[in-house]
Image (spheres, rainbow, N blue to C red):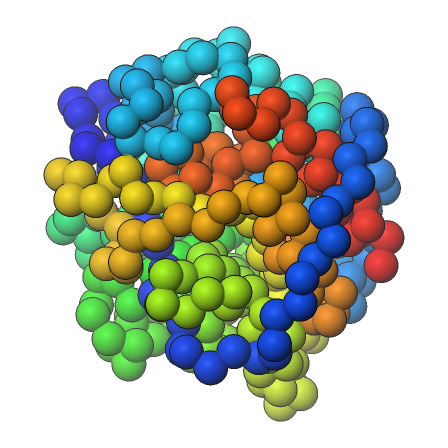
Length: 357
């Protein structure tokens, strides 16, 4: 979406995956929808002995004009909203609980971005007493003029300001930090790995926090403590979610090398109910990495079911839902005018199945 004086730029998208698919896709059965309980089931335990949590990506820089029908394929059932509105945040917290989430992965542009910083603080406040815990997705590296120092400043801010909050996500005793678009701002994996190595040494050399890298390969592990993939479908490489077992196996191979600060590495599965960013072609101010625009029909939940089915093959440690409210890319589970709360209910089913494995 185009930035305004009061809004932050559009979320970054990850690189396109390689064209080789891991398996021949199968047709998923249409899911059966049952009423969702008000709260999530008790998390299970992953292979590192910490909670098996389910998070949904959360965008907190919307203005009502985003929902005028020109930039998104659908609009919120509750109507256009401003992300700064505390009442809206409270509604989202209630819907997160309806979807049986453990929390949000909150897209945040760093401490110099007052809007996303203030709204993250509001989210923590609104979550008091709910059991929800949220992790910062640090996006300082994708902004114009980003430097290693701005990334260092963002990490230090999270650690000093939010990481010990009762509604900030910790696995075991370690707060979780999520990163994306790893080569930026350096431009290459080699330069980026060197840069991230310096950043880790400057902010958390003892791995007292858990860092999750985004990507299709293990270039940044074990410097980072885990791996996830943001976009699991692409125009030119459809059904890329089928590759998740391969990505997980590659991370486990790194893990077998041993001598890891946490004793192992986290693999996060990713699921999505659909995709459609075709209304944002050539939108000024878009800071996402270049990728072809495309759309995938939700098929009344069958697409979502297909992306979830493959997670049974990965041995994953936590689950990302793409997304709670990324309306620009059409991955939202937030209730919309065309599908109501269907995807909150489906997410609750999948979250509880995932935690129970």
